[in-house]
Image (cartoon, rainbow, N blue to C red):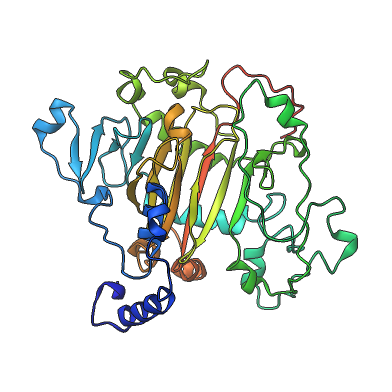
Length: 423
């Protein structure tokens, strides 16, 4: 990347901007940052460009037969990892899975999704999924085209998308306050407090009065998320079960279940005396894991996902499966508080991360950086089973995008939420 070349225009521009914006900054400001916040700042910074030498990059991992036979951990980019045996063969012919001992329950499956499947998932995420009845971040403010925003974007004569605020008969009648979304520190969900959370108010977000009608092409760059399965209410950081259970795509569900089934969970948790399992246990995941909720995130190059904890699922231990597509990203994962220094991991297109167990599922994590110009070559090549012309619009969009599909299981095994579910 040009930013790492000290003689490049990009480096000089970033340096000038850095000097200008930090001229009057309090020198002691960073002393108040938690270790997680310091890591976010480090990798988010445009200048100086972040040092990636301590970011776990599993494409550079090397090990010998003796290390594998011993079952001991070894180091990659300064991070201790352990190689697991799997039942899975990837596009490279060898299935690999790694754990990070300092984050019990974290499993990384590099290149788990083949190049062909990556392109198919991109098509699904844009063409098939980001449309009614699946909620997106834009639905609160715009009346999105029935055929879906992406399909309207591809149309040469698509009309402007109307706003809800200017269309009273279609605006949200019982909505919350307008303005910036407020930070919410939600109570962790569990079987004991499920009924109170089920009946807590979840007002619809108020449509913005300041947005204007826009073309589908303008709005496609503002698409940030689309819901999967059970509807997530961003205002309260709880699920809104009154909306019923949305569809979980069969292929997405199959990939997630295949990832979970490929891991020997005895290697991950067999020696663990970790508390917090309740009645849910890793021994049954190969048979009982059933993803029923999730989010598709659409990151543009300068987007970030700040430190947060997933507390909304009643089941706090079952696997959360995360699929990376497009440009690479730096993923940070720490501990139960922001005072734990996070591990930085480089995630590339096709990588799958599994967060599981009580420590990992309640760990702070985030994405402070999308790395520009890291789109894999197979996103721009013609594959055997499709015409290149039909893929061109997707390739252009993905040049500046990372798509993340993350799916989880809301309820633990044997828990009856007492809901009337209509699929």
